[in-house]
Length: 197
View 1 (cartoon, rainbow, N blue to C red):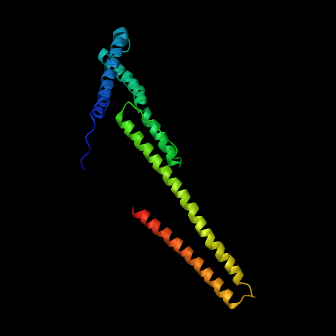
View 2 (cartoon, one colour; view 1 turned 90 degrees about the vertical axis):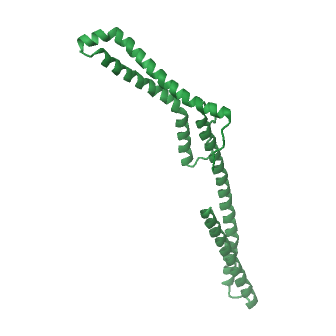
View 3 (cartoon, rainbow, N blue to C red; view 1 turned 135 degrees about the vertical axis):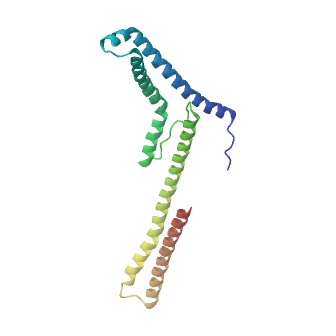
């Protein structure tokens, strides 16, 4: 199946993410090399004469250190929305389906993930409500025939019952047991259909 074409504004936004990333890499390299050059210019003679470290080695080491520090902090800034999504997923995994996250982001991919996450939690909330209602209804449906069976079997234990009353109570016990059997069969059928879906 072919993917639908993206609207122009979404395509531009997707491209802006890639350009932003390339811009970040270029700026990081330029800034780290620039600061390293400045430091090397000021203190290069000292390091070369005292510690016997050549200027180009000092430049490389400083560039790597500064670039690493810049990448760490900018990376944390860029990955912050993903961290929020991860924390929200942890909440959902612990059974909290009322979690929602903001869908606004500079990056289209994060917006798409956030939107899908919010749809997922909405569906999980509605499934939880249906499940709770189902359990409540089933327990009520079982309670009625169980109570009837208990009552009629207690009455059947009485010695002063006529033959007709005994037959009627036995029929009602049988009828309510059949109701419970039907309920169990329907639940098993629903479970089978749910597992096949």
